[in-house]
Image (cartoon, rainbow, N blue to C red):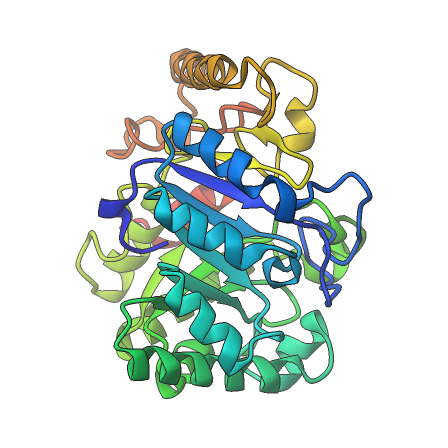
Length: 355
């Protein structure tokens, strides 16, 4: 998400599980409808009012596919009226010129398209036949509408690196440059949702993922694409040094986990968690509440305090050898939910790229 300077505290909202696709790596098992989903058309004002009360100034809509939600535009307009910034993740298949212009008029800050391959075959193996052509065409149309409206809405592409796209994913920055996209979010696979049953055909070894990151960073630099990478800052620093980039190139100040600190997660039922992919780890614990609970605000404060205490507890544990001399120690905390710290990628990068 760009424009962090404007964003103080974000609510990541899986607004629905309904989706017109069924991607094999979807962390949320998108495509599955649920009778317990909130009715947005009748509840959006109460939800936004509670969001404002809780001190959030930004909502990022996820799914499922947010464009399938009845009442979405009403929600966006009301959020804008209340001073809440909004951004949306979309699979990009349902966009029309009319919908794009409505999103622009509702002052959506950023639209992120999911594209999981630089070629039709690699992307469509993950997202379904015909997806690549349709999404790239809709990205072009979106950028055209933004330019015509003289809007400041940003367009970003998010991609998950897997076995299905590893051999061509380095070509993606050039593809994005050619269709007018300047921002790329590179993500690792999370072992939840559909990815659990498809892990064997998707999950990369740390050496493979590292090699893909190197190629993507090089090609992003060549094609003037601003890319964010889902890995520890030490990994990026080592890659930068290996290939002669500035030491701090593409190393975000938000590289550590910010669950419960800079953002919280709201699911399609109204339950709030510190983090989406690990929601199952904390269900029915002190780290959850519901947006409609009478004591919601009080509980949110307790969640934030609990996350802080967990991070402090993690920091007090003996430092793993791989982290002992790392200059990112103070900002690169482990997961406050499962107490996992450094990952294999750091070990691999240090083994392969240390001078």
